[in-house]
Image (cartoon, rainbow, N blue to C red; front, top):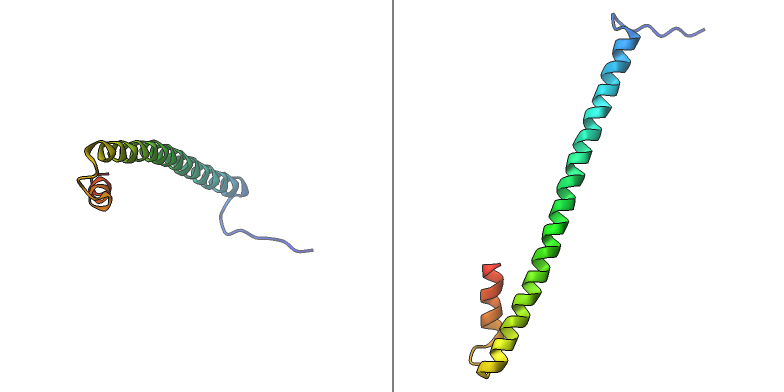
Length: 81
């Protein structure tokens, strides 16, 4: 018969600390997931805004007869965003 001897640690105490550790890890993972969700939502909103800005610039260029080259204007937009 194999007997496991834990040095001066009560088994109940050991499992309590073990469960607290996993609870904290679960809380950390939950916080990370919330941050990721906010990040993806922000990316989605910004991509919509960037697309609308690009369309607006192209419309303005069409009205002005393309006085500025598209590369110049769009490089200025990406540096702003």
